[in-house]
Length: 386
Ligand SMILES: [Zn+2]
View 1 (cartoon, rainbow, N blue to C red):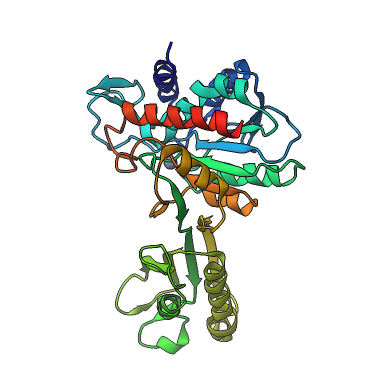
View 2 (cartoon, rainbow, N blue to C red; view 1 turned 60 degrees about the vertical axis):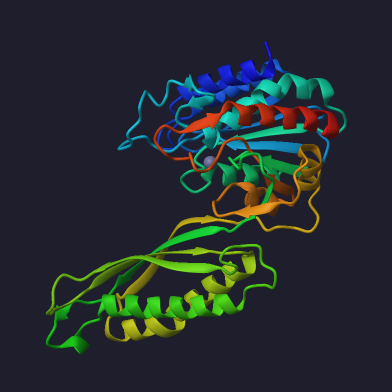
């Protein structure tokens, strides 16, 4: 069997596990563990608190050596409800050089390529190990990736490089913004609209908070570093939704605001978070509580996914560029687990088969030729890094 035949067959198996983020991924992880185990990897299955989800961490080669290369992918997929699929999304089918199925490009196609090449990696591995990080719950805020990186941080062994196989049409990507989502709940005191000062108007405080965010948005534009590769070049803030109040003549006692920030770096993220916390603690909350001690402003962190900051030094970027003949690396507008690995001190890139255009859509597919290119790259990495 050729590598491509094996990878296609494995992709069919992987798509057959309906690993929608809300459901268990244990069967899919068990399948990956079995394939890697057969190739001689030492495999760990790390379950989450619910026991229904797991990350997989596996190593081929020396267990106790630094400097390894991590192949990273998420096992979960987005739901298919409400989408108009031509066929069963969890039964892969081939048509016109494409493989169709939920997760085919995002990102089981990459995982299938890695699994198919595991025996080769086993043959070529030398001093520097190959690692495999297959996570749960990426699509709902990188929960698995975060747990895995926390676990790895406790260990003495330090992998050096990470290749995240999110779909980039096999282009080399070395940066993306982060994504932080917040829901803020304002609790005031209701009353009759004829005496506005007798209540604490939650909607008014929410709009003042929005005013603060808009002021910060202007500050962030001015903070954009020279030569920033991102589009737009600065950290952005978006007001997504504001709910509150019932009718004209009632003081609203509750309001809820959804907003997001896409930071280009940690410093901007801290700048905004500090400014907002300070604004609540020093300005609006004391004012609200003067009239009503129960008044409150509570911020829920829906998700904080860190970005991948392009770095001047990046061995895996240079290596993959050299091996694929790519000239230059770019940035992408979507989020990945790459920033988590960077926070752990690793050099990371995103490079994977298929296009993000097909991700999350009905009739998701991956071009078979993309998988062939990915297998080729892994084969070269096996020799080059091994
Ligand atoms: Zn993905």
